[in-house]
Length: 330
Image 1 (cartoon, rainbow, N blue to C red):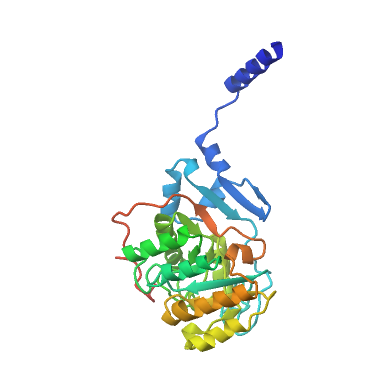
Image 2: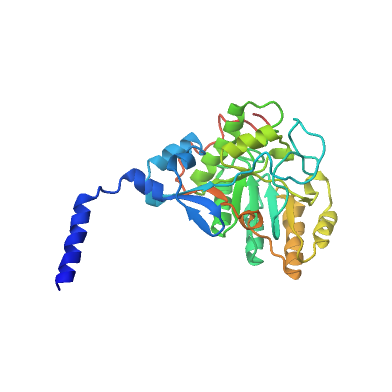
């Protein structure tokens, strides 16, 4: 009985003497640091917030810390990271993948199917096919390319796909070539507008980005890394954007064998890809026991797929592409 009273008194004393947990401390506790696949340690809140668009950061800072989690990938791509492939470069330090810009070019394990250029008409349908096969789709989406990401049909498709567990990353706002003389301010606009949109629509900020056309150089990669992004390319191309027939694209998948690693490029805006190639690919991958994984499970170190995860927003006057860069423009 005396011990019980002492314990209670000591607890009350500590509660009285110790300072109360500040809101900033609560925010700090909701920041995760990606050190290894098995361990996440607390990191400085400002480091994580500094990598977000101004609009997303302002929104997060206005929220209770229970409403979001921040992620900071500890090991970003560095200039010395070994890339795949080779070829001509836009600057002296770039190493190229399949004739395109530097970035992560393959999976450390397994297979990941990626789909560029959406959201588009078949976004939800493709997602349902992956779900039925118990596999994960990885979308690199634009904000304003084959339509506006804020169009109600696109918002609905994105939300349903995300609810099924599929991933959504950045392919820039207007699908502009980042090596075509853009300033850093223009690059910021390309990535921040996508962050704003996906935060409003899905409640996520992507940590992976794929430059349009696969065009980048080491300066651009370093800059995107500083914004918290891993630059993800591919090592296998279905050829759907280059004119391959569905038969030819199917043949690409038919050559996959159990135990191989593939990071595959497809485009969701191609009807043949949605209707024919993806169903064939999923069937073949299931046959060889090699499911399509989320990129976070395929890449080395299993980095977080998102810089921030929170609650999706409610449509308002800001949900528009008006006044933003038009498709193909900076």
